[in-house]
Image (cartoon, rainbow, N blue to C red; front, side, top):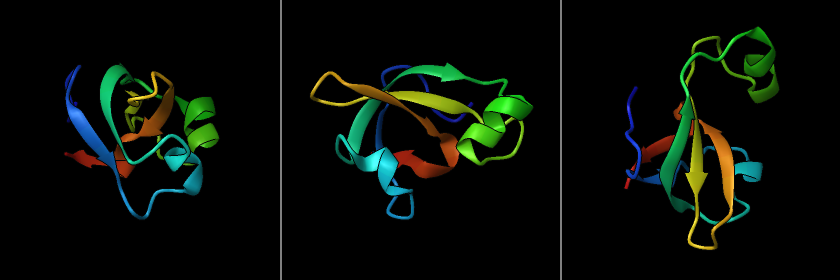
Length: 72
């Protein structure tokens, strides 16, 4: 696991636009570390890629694959 709960993160510039709908900056508030086949297809990532729940200043949160996050 690359990020911990509460870590400030930025959505990367190469992330699909759907991950930027609430802004580019947020904090980690959850993680699914054991992504299996069905969820990996949903997010278009390889099996085992962590999916983080990122909360934005608006209070809204979305799930974002680790490959589209970097430390803020």
